[in-house]
Image 1 (cartoon, rainbow, N blue to C red):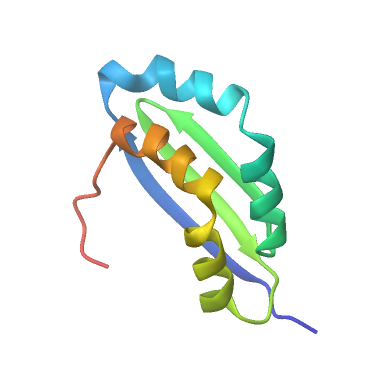
Image 2 (image 1 turned 90 degrees about the vertical axis):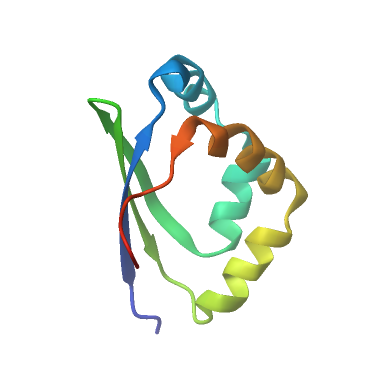
Length: 95
């Protein structure tokens, strides 16, 4: 039985990209959603307020590193990130 690992993150959306970011997430690409499930992620939610995104997800697999490598290698997910990443400002914190 897998242990559920929970993750959260806060990121600021660039003010000039808010509308585009919302448009993208109103219709996420089916291939990306399928990869999220294939990588054992569930309850992936994004909340938006005052140009801030709070994302939450749960990981229910047995090998997080392998599943992350699988997602990173997925061409459609890479294309999705090329659309969404320019909308976001890097966080101001150290890991």
